[in-house]
Length: 469
Image (cartoon, rainbow, N blue to C red; front, side):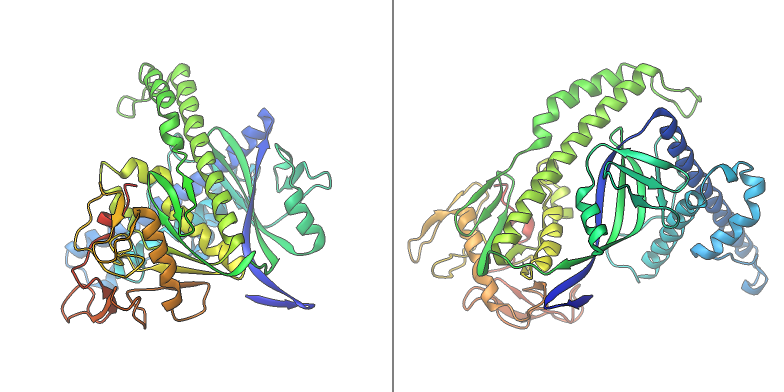
């Protein structure tokens, strides 16, 4: 949604602000009680839905007509909430000790899970198949509670927040960024979620924010971004962003912590054995080590994407098959540590904030095999060949820089001016004269009815293109 404001265009976006909390032992017990209440409501409603589904399935095996089956129950949030309010006095006599938002958190998660599962089964939801919701375990599930109504605010000192029934909570860091927007009236808090991650509690405020549409430093400049493993990103300008490899750097410490945990007495669900205190402490240390790696990765990706979106008006990236690359046991660890999907996700919304454009190259576009000088396409290019040598024009160039230049050249052939433009399959123009040819998929194939582009010498999967660089 775009709002016009006094000569400067503003964007109405949904943005989250996340802050670490410093809870007292008593406050932590209260928050855990609310998270437990959400889990109880979720499990009770799931058991109720599953019992009715199993009963109806059993009745069908007896030959009972559909009109005589056990009446089905609603899966929507209002229906689950009505059923919970009728049964909460028997299921949870202590329900008055927790906020109603705690029970609503569990019921809302179940309603969304059932909806996603149903749409995935019927084909209404694209992507990977969604499984049926599971019961939440007290030890394995992540404690979380979401507040949408009541007193939700940031205190004037910007070091404390107020949440319903939890009261005044101290922040580990200043909330000045959010407080300034709230005071200026350019942000409105929609909800607040308290969650434990890596042994630390966080509060995340989901806000409706009016952002002034910015502009890149070079709005007419175009840059191709070639992602890889050896180098996280190689730009068409020749700039190389090194891959920090946070997971590899912490692997030795993680192995030591994992060995220490394996020597302890862990929980056993079959015998009902509870974990020892030493095992719990070792497990907490290992969790904090993993959380540190995730935080370092997220911080690095945010800094890189913010800089790229702020400097260039048009960015071109590849449509990488990350799920397919993760199936390769030799590359999965490095690909997961790089965070390709997260990098593209951040570029998508940051370029729209800056008024720029993100162009996504087709998955089958041979950026590595194409000569950036004459446009010739090689039939084969092994991953071990790190230098691209063109046999026609004699170009000798680093493989990744050549691929980035081809991506940058792709932007000039893209039709449309949206914030994210897909090129290749579904495009209405050829990508490069002599580089790719537009073809029509034959009926009966997996991509029948789609017009796209493939290399004239045969298609090469992105799995082969992806630079184990």
